[in-house]
Amino acid sequence: MGGMFLDDQGDARSALLSHDVVTFQIFALRDDRQEILEEESELEAIRCACIGAVLPECQGYIWQHERFDLQITKLNSPAPRHLEGSVRYGDNVEDEWLVVSILLKLTKQFPRIVASVRDGDGEFLLIEAASALPKWVTPITAKNR
Image (tube, rainbow, N blue to C red; front, side, top):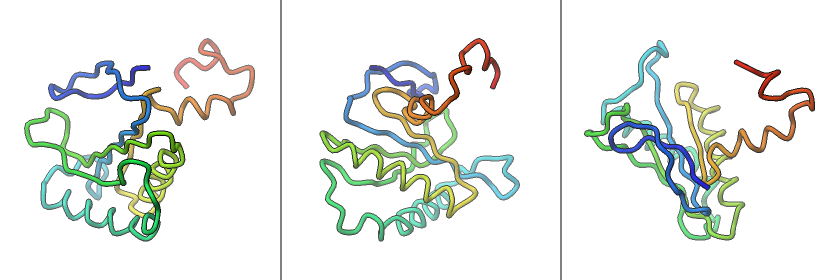
């Protein structure tokens, strides 16, 4: 299935993502939470802090194909600069859930960051949460919620 993402021109579009890849983005906010940090030195400091924070959790973990890592987006992207990464998890869906756990831990530990995660199904956390909704919730009854 296709997921939504911002391409190099900043347009949201559907792409065929591999069924065994999880992608994630981390945006850092300034103290006043009104502006996204885009300075490379600031993003690099946040990247190092994030990697350091999750290192104990990942140490000794055997990843199926690729390990958790973060990169700073390129300068020429029209989207605000941020941290991003992807993990190919193959047959080991536990890798995907470990990425979610890592992102949750990071957003708790660093309140100035927000994270987004997707896989080939799209925003799979929303899909998972849908099963916990009451039966009366439908697209009609939940409009603008």
